[in-house]
Length: 436
Image 1 (tube, rainbow, N blue to C red):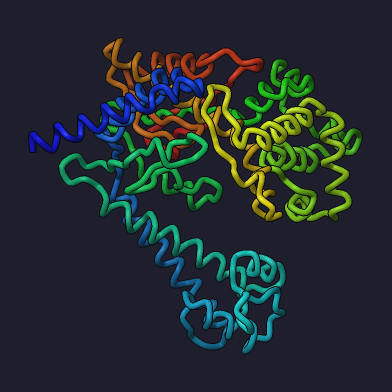
Image 2 (tube, rainbow, N blue to C red):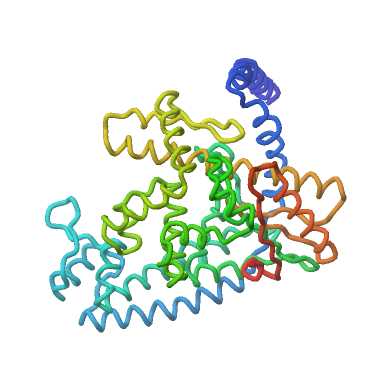
């Protein structure tokens, strides 16, 4: 064993000597020594601490969900006038398109096979109850098998907690990922998905405290692009989607604020992901011509964003990579591809990676600062989860006020930007209750 350890240490040392000059040459020394290496200690502490889970709550939810699954299954069989395997796409296709004669939305690439994916069922669900119920069935059974039934088996019997593993070197953008189990993909968009968070609880004398960066990627885009309209909106503390609605849609937005705020939100976030007129048209259920008019209107008002996107794409084509505000490099060989699809992917990645990567760097820096202060000040509260823009702590009740102020300060003042960073903080007995 001693010889093996010595060989490993020697290998690491030789790699270190070989790679350090390259890290310095690429300007990533600060990122390595001030963010990634200090973060290792933080992640080790989080993994060891784990998160307390109420298995009884999960079992109760699973039993309730099974009742709902059985009810849905019965109704689907009733509508189909026969029993079949709901989890078999082949049998489902036969029932929907051959026996019931529903309109065929699309076929798979295999000749003669009917597609039964989410997109197809959502289209059919507008008119047919059976398609809507199958979508519900799929959502419920996925939540049940992936979380309600799986999580209790992953609880460490000694600690009564789940100990996930965090990976620093998996996501190309620099984001952390989580595995065994993945606690970063617990659904939050559906009410049922959010309910699962009720099972994540705090030790006695503690509360769950969740701190969430508000619109961090839009704020990063404002900083990187220096767009005067975006900067002004964030510096004034305005609702940036309402401001965009007014800027792009004018009097239409004044006449119908909720609808046009929703349109503006789709555009604001879509711009960062290279949203096309086709994608926007599908999302908003409008014509491609109108969608293109919206995108043109956006770039007319946000010329700084347009200039930054064009400059970023040009730099990516020349250098073959893009980088975050803190120098994290994302190679993008696809941007020079002759394949139209690959090149399109490269262009979308070139725009999104500096934004998403900078946001990832910021939250990592905040985690290092928060962990350091908790240790230095001898506090009992601890970081237990990171879910992209959100940090979750198990906060001692006696320290709650102090911890809330500490977390807000370290997250909002992590680094000076052209716009203020804003954090929403809430606490409660469960992760579900800790929502602002």
